[in-house]
Image (cartoon, rainbow, N blue to C red; front, side, top):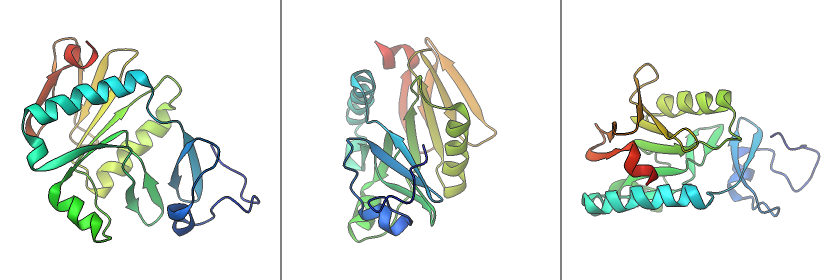
Length: 181
């Protein structure tokens, strides 16, 4: 969604966007001058996040990093995205504390029925260009997970297929069925 730029309350640069607080209850991403409006996680998406967070802790990955929702991810000088879920190492968290921009190596997007497929594909391209190594696109309505390890390498998982975050988190694996139970 493009917001009219003549509104003085709306940012016109990425620097302005980074300090801007929306007052309409929505969340936004920034893509080369375009404000992209979205809502936060719904209850079903939160359940999926919690399931994946439980697995993350069970596998002990919480000792080396965090799985965070809607993390501000500055992909370039003109893009700030907020993936639904992102994995950050403890080192990346420290670098962020020191003001550095960090790129998660593993990102999960939970695709809603209102997401535009062209915009979803655009994000995947942006993620890999910026250094992300694994992207999961979880599609709750179809109970599918698209596991990307590059723009050209994707595995479509359903039912008992295993989704893996390798090579970023080698033992972070879960069946599609378990994500939606």
